[in-house]
Image (cartoon, rainbow, N blue to C red):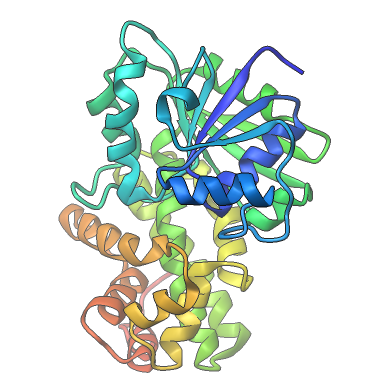
Length: 333
């Protein structure tokens, strides 16, 4: 067991899966949740029955609701909360990072809904610029990581040494991390692919078939690249794990909450009813609004994103939304 420990902040399915992986990699893990009853349940059951039922917690994982205990010593900090809670968690951890250059990483996907900024901008604004920052992203389902199935991710950082350290610490025989210096591109890929997954789920739910799904994925990737490069990301990032890899995974497998949202929309459910059925955070719902408004501000044309936004927020009939994409004027690819 290494002397280094990890503080995983956020005990949803993804946070718990990463905690399990980190424990397998040989590190002690403090798994923090703001909900004391949730923590008490994990301690009682020896598992996270709320979000990852049936998967025992490793002995190296200690569930905690006290943030000061969770951040004790010089542990690696990994934030895994929904995007709407990211700024709040940064504010909460700020007092524990003063007078240090301690790094902060996160596996949260999405933008800040209040400001439509990328999360590294939020973190820098709250925590200051002296802290190395990193984002973990890529094609990952929590249940498969929890089971130790082979997985690959990208770790993008403003500090190449910090990215290298995290990649080495997270590496196991079944988990490979690639490093990147494109934080913008990796974050845009992680946010926008959830919007495309809602669109793909909607099309599949309407019975439009594999041809439509392939078209949505391909043109969806084009949209993501247009927005990402307009915001300063690198085009090649979107052909990697955090772009095409995550997009393909999320659009094609029903483990994706975003894809399931689309399937429920196709059944006639509105977004509130669909979210209640899914029972967990569906990041693509807020991302559809944030990405659409960001693209509109930058003058980036994103028709799939626009139709998904209209379906979610302006009650456009899903069949009309998909059909409108095929009624657009002919253009060169």
